[in-house]
Length: 73
Image 1 (tube, rainbow, N blue to C red):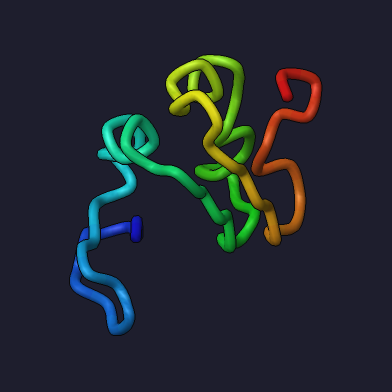
Image 2 (cartoon, rainbow, N blue to C red; image 1 turned 30 degrees about the vertical axis):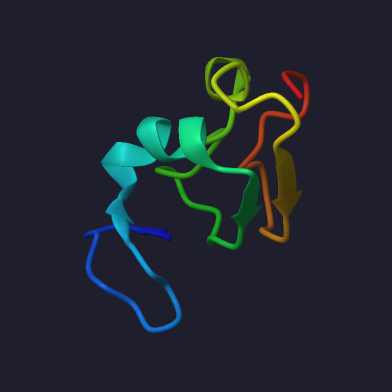
């Protein structure tokens, strides 16, 4: 999982800081976005991040707002 601080969280084997998102995305088979929409998360997933997803990886967004840049998707 990814959170702001990288602090361990129940039900997650490993947790990373938001600043480490690019490294985590490179490894993930499934990415589930369940984050609030804020200025920091606006277009968090854009063309540059979509390009580093593993081939065949899934992206599931249950967040609100423009966390994903839909034009880039």
